[in-house]
Image (cartoon, rainbow, N blue to C red; front, side, top):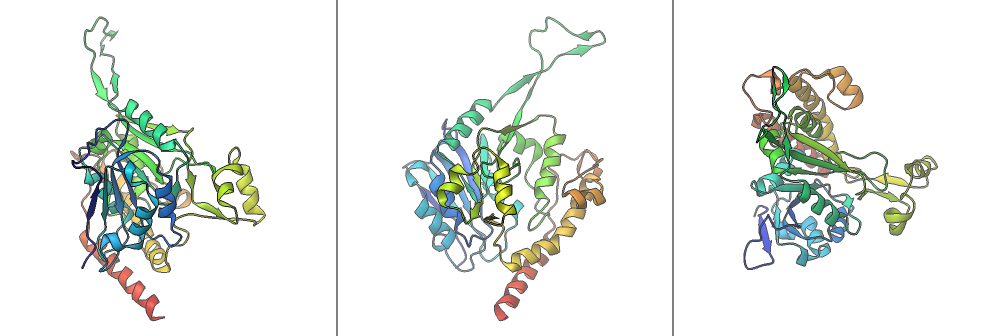
Amino acid sequence: MNCLSINFNNSMTTPSINSYPCIPVMGVSVLEDPLNFVYRLAKSIDFCVSHFVLVLPAGGDRRSTEHPVAVSFMNGCNKSLFGFINITCSGDHLLGVAEGWNSILKSKPDAPWYLISGYDVQFLPKQLETLSVRFWNQSGELEKLQWKGSYGNIRGAESPPIKTIGNFIHTKWKNLPGGKGFSLFALSKEILQNVGYFDENLFPAFWEDRDYKIRLRLWKGTRIRTYRDIRPIHGLYLGLSQGDNNHSLFSSSSSISKAYQRDRKVQYISGTSYLSQSWKTLSHMAGRENREYACQKWGCSLKLSVTKYDLLNCTYKTPFNLKDVSLSHWVRNESRIGWLRKEYRRLILAVDAS
């Protein structure tokens, strides 16, 4: 039997996704989890979530509730904080990163906003509450525009035009320098309506975040913020105690972590550090085509994009410079995705046979 979609509802009625101050929709898409990061994530969720989506990796003939990742999450989470838990996967099909994120966004297309987390993230106490309350308070913002005529601003207008603001937020990390990536992000429904879903042609991974960043910048209603005071843990450092990973060593200076790595006393690992060789091989196979596709889509410098792992010197304002198409435009290439999925199964069989 293929992996099924199972719903866990803790109330007699379906909880509202507009229940302030709870997080309306939170989701995690898991590639592979040999280090059991999902359990740590689940334990760290200490604030109410109306609708939670756990997207599992390929599970073959295993029911979703029997999948080890699902078991880890359900064992780790405080079920009383969740109104609705949806555990879903695609059977034996390899799921791309963009597909996983989209399945979270599509689970409740009418939600006011969404929080998507990497499975190797750990929240510290009260961080989710702070994030949720702040994002709610910033949702539905309207920006007043000045009317301008031949002689400048028109004064005395009773109702100046307004435009809706779409919120997109990142955080920083407690245990790492930098941040602001797509390992943890939140977006409002206005972003989804105007920027669209992630491009699933960037399969199975890499460049889907860069493509979305281009679209966020091109839509004039986007308000991108960084919540610098909310700093969860990303990955972990092997060789440190749980307490040191969470608190003491990386609370004030990223130079400490660099010094530790330089002395080879600890090793930083993330959720992708221990992906199977089959997954890594496939990602590298597809990575070059993904980069070329993204550069062609936005008219970017291929040479600079290779060097910086970013889309640079891009000249198009619409996908592929097409007229009369929105920023959300993309057409799924089923033949390429199907071929890569077959290659993944072939790679797994080759590993099993060796």
